[in-house]
Image (tube, rainbow over all chains, first blue to last red; front, side, top):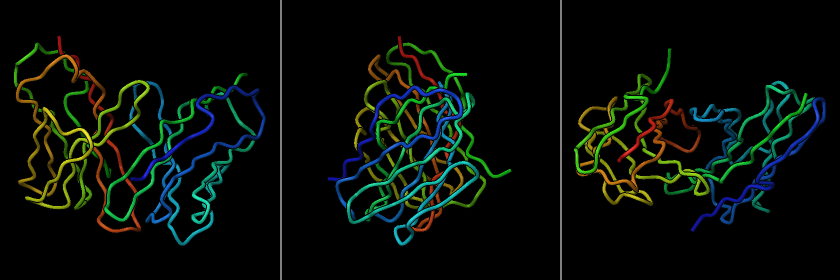
Length: 111
Length: 113
């Protein structure tokens, strides 16, 4: 059974710092991996989608990488800003078309 | 605008009173799914649908029903709500296939007293 783990559970950094969020999964037979952002009490906003055949995707200050063989993905945020404060979730779509979510990393960027 | 629309956004109800949370998408997506989100437990899948008239249980289906009579709509029905169904609910949709990711609705915060 696929399990998705995100480390750390919470992170506090000063504004301007570059940071890395980690996501690991137990079964490498995935179709894709998606990173989301969630603001408190709000819905999920898709940030990046990486196909199983891809190694990375970039959008602005965000870069997500995928290493299927080791069951890992990282989300790199460059030059963090207070507006980046949110919970970041990763989700893997597996061969059964189920999508399994990690518990998320709560990020706080201090001004 | 391409979106998933859930209604209502907030709902307070009493134990045992049947309710329906609606979900509609305008992107012609085949795949739709319901999740609940609880503190410390993350997002857990309740039911999903691969297409019209095709639905299946997720990880926590007990106490819920769904139907998929039209491609765009996927309502979540609580026949007899209980306090342990107090949660934040999300509907999501996707094109079928491995290339596509999810689009989420804004959520429905349900409180059962």
